[in-house]
Amino acid sequence: MNVIMMQKAKESIDLLTFPYAWNVLSFPAGPPSQILKIGVFVKKWPHRSHAGGLERHALTLHLALAKRGHELHIFTTSSPNSTFPTYPFPNLVFHLSRPTSGGYLDQAVVWEQFRAQNSTGRPFDVVHTESVGLLHTRAKNVPNLAVSWHGIAYETIHSDIIQELLHSPEERQATMMTERAMKVVEEVRFFQRYSHHVATSDHAGDVLKRIYMIPEERVHIILNGVDEETFRPELSLGIDFKRKFGISKSRSLVLGIAGRLVKDKGHPLIHEALKQIFTENKKFQQSVTVLVAGDGPWGARYKALGANILVLGPLDQAQLAKFYNAIDIFVNPTLRAQGLDHTLLEAMLSGKPVMATRVASITGSVIVGPESGYTFSPSVESLKKTLYKVWNDGRVVLENKGKAARQRGLQLFTATKMAAAYERLFLCISREQYCKYQK
Image (tube, rainbow, N blue to C red):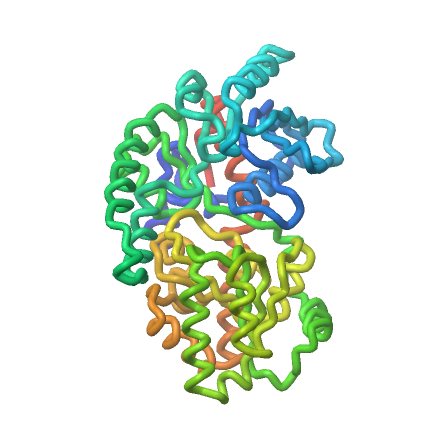
């Protein structure tokens, strides 16, 4: 925050019109001033290490709110072929239903479940839907509702432009761009039916207000957060992880990549960049190890690049914590411009610098300057240039950037910060008296 922003934050402010991320504010850490009854709609609840960003957000946020003592009712789907996780919170209740053929919540079923719970005991103080868990056709009837967006069509247009530029002429799909533009128009129309909107990045908040024309008092920026108790610097974890996978101490640099190993996460881009660098610079290849965590079709391709690339498969949270502590820098080559990737935040809280594609959600909220990492344009040449810079900067520079990255992570991206911001928003929606903030 600049000086003007800090001065404004010290004044008594109306939270509903606060234009910045609520994560910069400090909310009381003591017991909540009111125990809320919260209804939550999420199309899929995370299962072990197989979870996307939306599901991980739902898990982290709502477990934190349950620990705070709030009564939560989660309306979600359950697969008949898998066991559903259990948690030690009697105030966390799941209402399960069979997914539709497309994997979504059956709106008629969950609406009846919701109505039954809304008329049992006391009604819900606030309702939260992760993206379109609850469709706008139902949401328009719920005035005390907040929706968290983890990607909107306007942001996706940037992703489409990137992918179109990377396609060969025979692969290009100009009609998709037209369809996406119409999707934006559709969203502008139906987004108005949701009472409150939570943007998970500064850029998305700006788009919701300027492009989607949602009144500012209904748009709130709360950046994603991750578990700061799990993701923290711990040298011994990294040493054990390196020993387990036989990573030599002579390696001058360890790069880390994690997530789904699929095309739109940028794996064709970094695969080609590494392939070219390994061919043209044997010293780089001999001194650098690349750890790849995750599964997907690009895993086998990475293995074919050489013995200095280790494909680890999907890792659970505890293993990921060790992974981050074993690397010198985390690389995220995503081609998706929407949302705010959890892996970047996990790496930063683990005290590691980050390197990522130059898209608005990342440069506007995460890597806002060179102090904590590097950004590159989504092209092989730009990615190669940045990889060489990281290599030439070396471990001392990277360690200093990692310290700065952790400080930014502690200020903005912890689960505690995120949950406190959501709790205050939910309190504000339920009772107007909580909408005033005094530093």
